[in-house]
Image: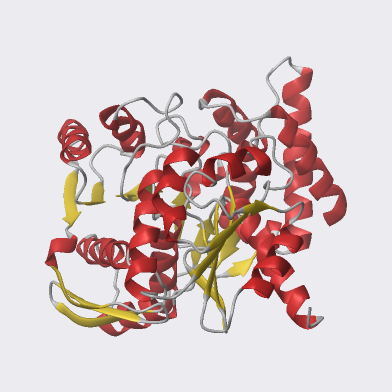
Length: 432
């Protein structure tokens, strides 16, 4: 296959849906020579903050001289964004070549009557092959859904698990209580490894502590109560944490203090495990970290922000950030969500802050909530809201309504934020 053909193959594989369980993933990897067994992993699960913590750790490790693989999902701007080494996307040639190899293995599986792997399983295998080829020192690996039965959980050579804030998300799939969801997320924990977690809700914390005792793991807890001298800002922020003073980060959002503190605790743990990360490398890595789609400011007059707040807790932290940074400034929003999310709660938390809003249907996904249905919900809190037929239309309308001192927020599903960014660039380049 060439790159175009590989992309078509991967897009066609999406029809096999999302299936939890590890048997098929193990079979595929066995046929590919189990590349994951030749790598070392930092495995990240949780509900909110996985991507940001992954970005902090990856950048700090890169600044410390390590060759670092990143595996992330979903992506915003490029398909190749999901597989990176030292922040460089997988090359088109490598993607095509490795996809061809995987396709041959899949074909043999089907000939033997085995189940066709899902696209996430294929992409995960692709990442493992590429990271081995690039001789990565560490791979920072983000779970796709949950943890216990997520395709990434085939790895056995984890050096450290990191668990971000756990909240109610994907109920009915991962569990219907916080304890059940926490048990699923904690399913990535391997025997006698180091585990780093934020200070969780007591119900979730108890589950993590129980699993760590059972697996004979050392548990290190990042407690934002130990963060001090916090200076918030939508462009730069700083804080003290334990022995480190005046750590600076460039990611916006009040919640990034917790994510950064968790990353610092993970770095402290890596040093205890024998890795070498100097204080200056930690500071440089934190400040250099970029993570588009998480309270990312795209322009300043008006302030235009994209944020992937897609569940109740993320909506609460988004609201806190807006109230903290933009008191007494008018807010206009563009919102799109998946129908299997708690969109009623997200709307209830965020929409009352707004002057006016526009709902859209996230494109190209069967899980998308129709704009009209979302509009009915938001009108309960902001009657002036309207729907748009496209993302480009929503961006144009919001820019026409907002003055220079106002704030525009595009939020909800991460899946449409890349299109928002492209639409904003197009609108500005044509001066509409």
